[in-house]
Length: 450
Image 1 (spheres, rainbow, N blue to C red):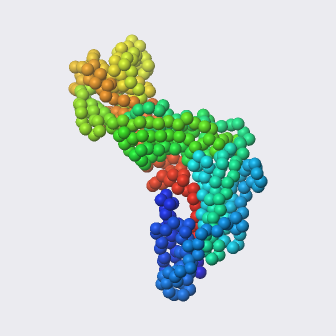
Image 2 (cartoon, rainbow, N blue to C red):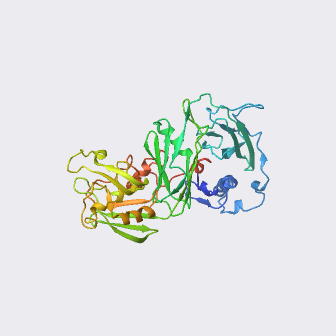
């Protein structure tokens, strides 16, 4: 007779176990910790099948699980180093096995910094082995839960230290932007000092790059190329959120002769929800703060041949004064469209030179027609007001322009123009899956069938 046991819900530390047999009999336990319930459910089901009696077979006293867990030292074997001062090779996986008198029900492996090691437990509970790389020069604690043939629980805590890596080749990650205050549209970036092309190695790197937000958001990393990742939420950051970013790569093996290095963490303080929407066809910019319309400004945008890009952009920097010359954007000096002008209150939204700025020379066209070379121009007074109320990381969105859509990457931050489903496909961990698992959710693995 075959029986199938499945376990779900590790995040809350509570498991749901379902046991099925060919006759369709089902027993469900939904609010008891799995490590205290696994054998109880299986044993109970077998007794129901054998005796044909409802839940009576498991309702009596004498449950072996009520006893204090025994020391499972004699029941399990571990491939860790033997003897004092000996260190484990971080290149080799951990392995825990159990003798014929019992089975493993749960294993957690965690280093001193809180990093979990993922692993797999065999279907019959006889063997557990790690599936993610160990960190070098680290201290690990393994907590092993077992049960004997009568269902009584056993416990054993194992510790080991790993040796230093034999190679000096390290992967360093530099996070961006610098710690500080930003708007709700600011993505997080991670720049690697050497390319990572292999998918499995990308997963190791990405799993170690942690972004935490208060309040929490649904977000994901996206590989821009072999050396750069961006992280953004599904929607903009919540107003006044706190975002912390750090790497757990230090000492982690990524590939042959390549190990993770230390990286500097960062903290972003998100401000008000500021979104400026420019309607190119209406020649108007509407400034929203925390979803309230607080100002409408007449503007001019790019004329035919120099149309302003549509889509979402993120403020890159603010400059009180900029000298703007047509030659920097490919306009020949001396041509009809050539210009060389002092520009004030300039808010930059692309690296190629698109700004929101004061344009006193076009005040007569502002609110009526588009006459610029791609920037959004307004009066000096309005530009000064905009300059004082906009911040790095705030959102500037252009609609109803005849221009192309803002590039996703490479010319500033067009990250928000990519659909969330497409964005997630750029992750080495979550791909197109509906929800993004965190590393600790997969660190504790139990049998899928017995």
